[in-house]
Length: 340
Image (cartoon, rainbow, N blue to C red; front, side, top):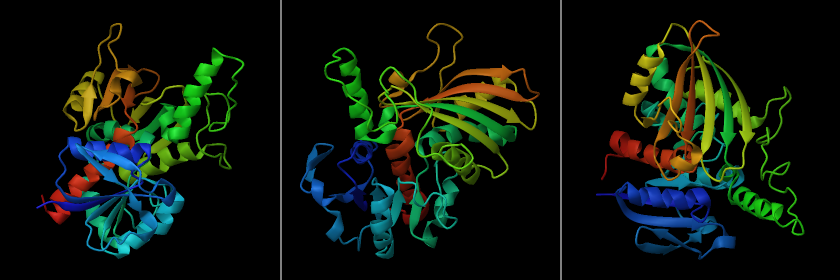
């Protein structure tokens, strides 16, 4: 017996990726509803070999449905997620709306799967920010061995993290570089993204950090350990898909780079590609379409007593969004609903 499953925002980048991953992982679905706003009503989306037409989110009745994967913005989530949850449908939300709510678990299944058991407080589980998700997958097994004191992370985040508009803007601006007559000014981003990097993701906060940086700090503490100190610099780069992170870690005790490499090789969701030679590391282009969080460039940091550096790359539309949501649904299935 399978699940009655709803995908909300099925026509967007993340929604379509959720459908792909549900099919790839053979998630046990008895019935599937794909929802969209009225502007996209009737749009066809693919689920394996099937073609489904979207239904109207505004009038949909969630009663009797098991799980709803939400891939819409915070405003739409604020309106519709409580309705779904009140109807008895467990919401897995990809927006930022519920991530910092103490009554809503924030879950990365490789890191804190037991937290799904707290879903019943609001019938909602939150998906973390894409940049946080891949980082905590790398940090947790190391934290279990040698407690982490502090993390300094610099991110190199692809334009797909800002949605289809970001992808289109990079594409259009790149073409316009070679055709100056067809100039494409910045709209989605604050400055030109083609052949450029922008140290600004989301809005600025009073202390000078951006909200994307703040998210990484708060979410890492909620998912792994509130005592970990985190400082982040988040940068948008002209890459279509795939987030990269340079992570510096300070531990409570010494952790040898070889032991760290062995620990990460055995960690769930992690793939270590770390050869000290030309090309012996993973870049964003190579991670696209893959489930894994790739770790490279593992090395001691000799400037502090117990330091380690590593390079972390993942497909942000998968592990950073759609895949993690599906994994949460799978974890719910095995630990709570016990169907399929």
